[in-house]
Amino acid sequence: MPPRSPLPQRLGLDPAWLRTPDLDRSRPEPWPTMGAWLGERLSEFLDVAGFLADERFVYESGAPVVGIDLYRPHTFVWFHRDLREEAFVPGAIRVIHQDERILVVDKPAFLSTIPRGRHVAQSVVVRLRAELGLPEVSPLHRLDRVTSGLLILATEKRWRGVYQSMFQRGEVVKVYRALAPLRADLELPVTVRNHLHKRRGRMQAEVLADAPVNAESFVELEAQVDDAQAVYRLTPRTGRTHQLRMHMWGLGIPISGDPLYPLVHDVSVDDFANPLQLLASELSFTDPVDGEPRRFDSARSLPLQSEDASILAEPHPNPFPEVDL
Image (cartoon, one colour):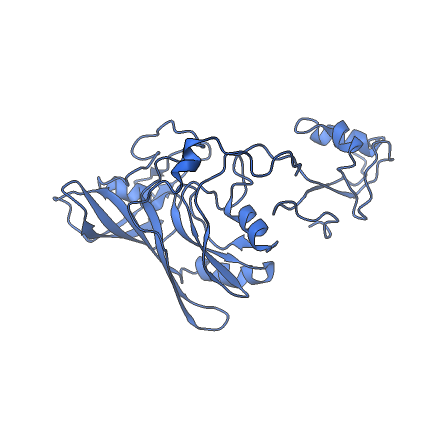
C-alpha cells in the first residue's frame, strides 16, 4: 500500500497512484528520467507531457514531478485523472438514516454504487462524498446500477470491516419488491435454488445445471395489480450477481423493465426513461457494534417512475464541467 496521498480528493474521488520499480539485474539500464518512466507507463491512457507541464504528477512530499528528474526507484507518484463527461442521473439519493458509523440511503435507478467504468461522477459514492462531506464513505454491499432502493455505507474506513463481515456471514435480511407478470398457474410461495454463474465479458448470467447450489431466493406473491401484473416479495438468501432477475425469469415472470432478461435490449446508458421494476425495500440486522436491532424501509414504491421528466426531456450539462480529476 502507498503512503498517505499528498493530494486531497477532488469531487469525492481519490487520486490515482503508481510506484516506480526497484532496480534489479533484469533491467541493468533503468529509465533515464521520471518523465521517461511515466511516458512508458501512461502515454497510452493520458497526455503525459501535458500532465508534466501542468505539474499534475506529484511526489509524496507534494512537490511536482519534473520530466527531467533523474529516475528514482521505489518512488510513489500521485495524480488526478480527467473525468469523461457523464449524463446526470435523475433522482435524489435520499438519506434514510445517518449516525457515526453507517449511512443508509435510498438510491434511484440508473445510479452506479461505486465509481467504475463509464459511471464515475454519477455514482452514489462520489455524489455522497461531495454532498455530505464524507471523504471516506464506502458501500458495505452491492446494488446493481439499474436497481432502486436501500444501500448501506460505512461513514469511515474504520467501520467497514465489522459491518462487511455481517453481510458476509449472511446476518442481514434483505427484502425486495418486484413488478412482474401475473401467472395464475404458478404455485407460490416458492424457493428457487440453483447455481448461477456470470462470465466476464457477458451481460447475462447463466444457470449451471450440474454445479452445486450457490443461489437461493424465496419468492411470494404480495399483491395482484391487475389481470396482467403483480407485485412480488423477494427474499434472497444468497447474493449472486443478477440473482433475483435470473430467478424471476426462471419462474416465467421476468421483472418488468429488465433490459437483460429474458432478452438483451440495446438501451443507451444515458437512457433513464424506463427503470427496472425492482426495489430493495427492506433491510434488517442486529448492529454488530452495539447489539441494537436495526430496520430500514425504502420510501419508494412500485411501480417505479422516471424521477424527473424535465431532466430527461433536455440535455443536462456535465455537473463538473472543465474539471480535471
